[in-house]
Amino acid sequence: HSYICGADMAVFYLLIGAESFPCDTLCEHIYEMEHTLHIPDTGLLHLVPWRDELVESLGYDIRGSYVERFWLPILGPTATWILRRSADVFDAFPHGTTVDLADMAATLGLSFASGKNSPFARSLQRCVMFGFAQPTHAHADGIAVRRVAPPLPQRFVQRLPPSLAVAFSELETDPTARAVPSRHAVHSQPRNI
Image 1 (spheres, helix red, strand yellow):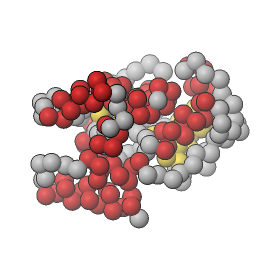
Image 2 (cartoon, one colour; image 1 turned 90 degrees about the vertical axis):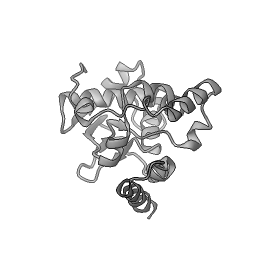
Image 3 (cartoon, rainbow, N blue to C red; image 1 turned 45 degrees about the horizontal axis):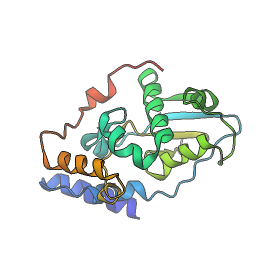
């Protein structure tokens, strides 16, 4: 399965200490997910943090400027804000909790309707489609959400507006500019919900 192959290849590159890590290989397994998120009629969804040591070691804080500049044009603003709100939830509840989707949608200026065709539900599905969230097996109405964003793959860089593509290129060529947050920095900053 491509998920396992992509993850194994990424670990291989880490083990051999390759200087030029192929981001697309690392991320291939992330962006080709075929999961469809079930939005419960109750509007209650159990959120848990998605633990992925590889992405957490190479990625960026979901609430940081990297995600805002480079991932937001790909994910869309509502999906990006859903990820940020989820990170806020994990600050208060590190192991996850059940959230009211109507309340979360309202904090983003949206209404919530059960079913997969509401704007909020479509944005939540985009989080799954781009590998930032996945249904959980442990909880029927559950979803695991990333707190750390993976590096943007080249195929998405090509979709960025020209000004951001230039900024991304400059970031990638300047090794001092790519400050990867430590696990402590990402997981210990309290934020209000």
